[in-house]
Image 1: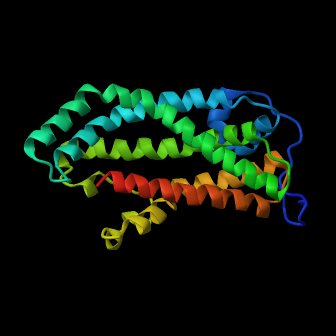
Image 2: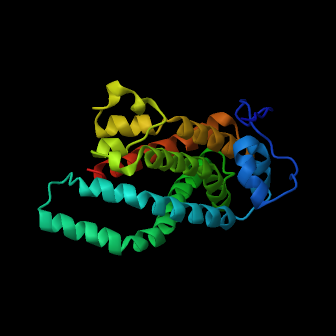
Image 3: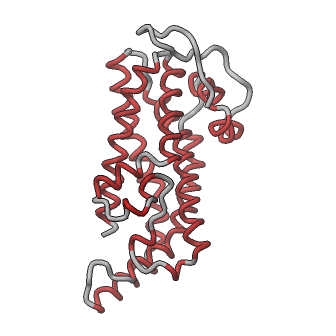
Length: 247
């Protein structure tokens, strides 16, 4: 991850945004992984927030489509002990109306981004008065591509192992963090959510987000961490809800 230097307003290190590198959306989709500083420059210079959202929307639909067989397999295991008739009706509805989920998935993702960006915008403004909602939203979506990669890898691993090998809801979980260790297999919903929120990819996301907030709004990294903590806490809450819905 690229670093920044300079004195921040609070005496800590801070990232400055000076000038704008050439390029736009497409090169930014690559550089957010290998040279995020250039992406931060472009966001600070006014790169439109809706451009990365279109990419994320398409990827979200693809991931949701690839994930449908996994969801059907888990639902078919009847983890809620539904009567046979009710279970068959549920599976039939999932097959017939799965396209609705594909349509709603990117809209739900955008709604989550908007809500979190609004909260982060308030947090940064309280700390420095320098935030901007659209820039926070744009940063969240570029950094969110890291999470999209994580989701894609999870589904890829499940498909390579074979959907038919899923014999419990636990078999459908793939973790890139501490939750993958065998002695955490019986962890409760909160503990698992915390561990999943600190996976390799999520830590990467939080680092990029922190550096981005500091660079784009020219505040110290110490102040930027406050916004990152807000995002982390919300991510734990969302993972807990996801864990409850999977039961």
